[in-house]
Image 1 (spheres, rainbow, N blue to C red):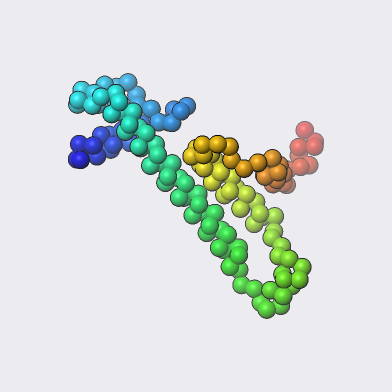
Image 2 (cartoon, rainbow, N blue to C red):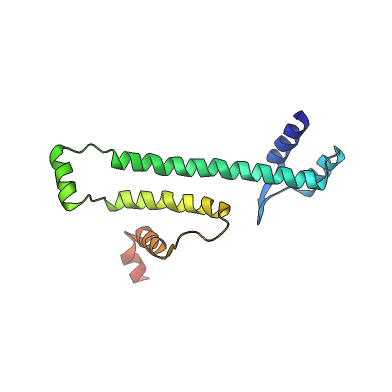
Length: 144
């Protein structure tokens, strides 16, 4: 078991982002193969390290989104404000919506790496995201 941990540690230290996940440089691969690791061992280790990194990013993204939603939804409401929300609905500021959209977008990017099939229809979401990203610079965009 200790040898496998050593391999995973070495791969995590040496791996770099490639087009299809993590890759090992030629020198690192040769050095590890000289230690009696096979090419298949290295590919398996790269996959495990990559999955571990993605899971960490997934947890971080979910935590960020959840924390912001708890913050927004847990904002103190007076009895009068709660009654108004029941009657007229609850309104969120564009800043709060933009923060949620950014966090959901990041979470969707990570989840997209795990999904076997397609994700949800993003057309409306992406349109909202684009509008929020351009908010405040519309006049500059029209002038150029």
